[in-house]
Length: 260
Image (cartoon, rainbow, N blue to C red; front, side, top):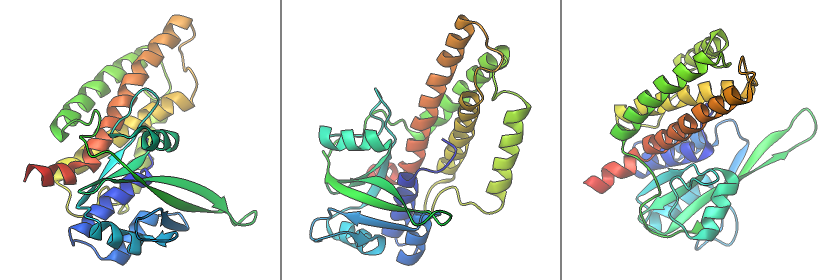
């Protein structure tokens, strides 16, 4: 949850590009991030994989006016609208981008390439048809912000009571490192997003970090079966809430366009 999903970078910077707020080269550079290359295959009108700049131009000509994010999990098709084939690919990848204005979606597939000691990641985005319908279970920014605040309070109380890793000094040290990275200039969202979307995404990432720390550090002080069950019950809804808030933040650009 802490690391930015590839679908988030593509949607955010793709939206900034579609709005004319960044150049194609700057958008492509931000989307690729630390990966080596990103290419898009399956685009209508293209015979093979193409680079991000050409792909974004093609999507614009196909009628795409914005990009949404989906972060589905088993039993929770968050941000998806169908059809089943696209939903299955997105669920396998745990993320996808769904176009607004044209019935297309993009699902990433990452590959490791290169010799030992010089391995890099190459990403192929598969363009597939989607159903034009409202995305599943995506809250408004206001709803997401309220849900996050409540979930964070409840989870912190439960985790602290059970002495679960993620609620003490280890979590605070990780959060301090996270804040230091952010202060060195990491842009949370691309230009054009409202300040509230930035605030919601930052809080969602912070909540996601707490959940990740709790999972990664075993059962902490929860030694009985009932305590372990209580721990899981505390983490599952807060992780779900954080994912919903992430999607709401990334999708804020398109939601604003729909309102106007």
